[in-house]
Image (tube, rainbow, N blue to C red; front, top):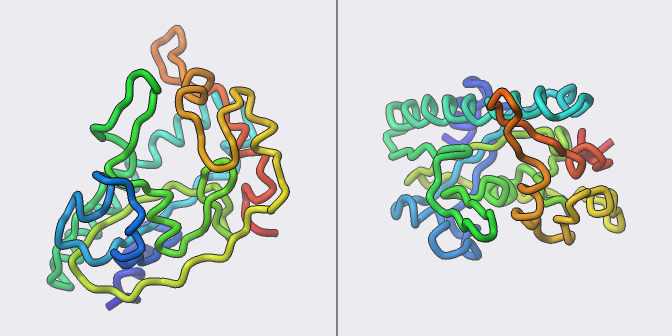
Amino acid sequence: MKNEIKELFLHLGSDLCGIASIDRFDNAPEGFHPKDIYDECKSVIVFAKAVPKGITKVNPRIIYQHFNSIGPIELDRIAYEAAIRIERDFHGVAVPIPADGPYEYWDEEELEGRGILSMKHAAVNAGLGTLGKNTILLNSQYGSMLNIGAVLTNLDIQPDPLAEEICIKNCRLCLDSCPAKALDGNHANQSLCRKYTYETNARGFSIVNCNQCRVVCPRAFGKK
C-alpha cells in the first residue's frame, strides 16, 4: 500500500513523497497537531513539487512572486485528486490540507500567520529534508526549491526514515544576507520579514522584494 500511495502522488505531478507517522508530531504546538484537524489521523502523507531554479535568477518582484503564488494551487489540486483516489482505492479517509491559505491564525501586531499545519515541519517528519538556518526545507536533491503539500489519513502507513542534515554547520550566508535582519538561525521574525519583503505595486499587484535567504544558500539547489 505504501509504495502504491507514493506512486499515486508522483503520477499526479509530485516530485517527492514521504510518509510521517502521527507520533512524529508530538512536539507540534497546541492547535496545530494533525489530530487537531482530524482526530483519527494515523499517518501524514507529505509531497513536494519542484520550483524552477530560473525564478531565483531574476529580480523577484514579479516572476518569483507570481510563480511562487501559483505553486500552492497546483499542490492543492494534487492533494484533492490524491485524497479521492486514496478513499476509493484504499478505503481509508483522506483529508487534503491547503498548501498555503486559507488559515485562521493571525497576529496583527506581530504580522505572524500560521497555516493549519506546518508544511515544512511535516516534510521533515516525513523524511523529505531538514530545515536550514533560513527556516526553509532543504532537500538533498532539490535544495530549497520545493513547495510542500500534505494529506492526512486514518490509514496506518509505514513511515519513511528521517533525512540526514545537509545544512552546512558554520555557514551564515542566509543570516548575514538578510536585509531585514529577520533570521537568528532558528526562527524567522515574520514581522521584520513581511515589512521588508511584501508590498503592492501601483497597479495593485502583490510583489516580492526579497528572496535573499533562499538564493544565497549553498544548498539552494541541493547537495552537490
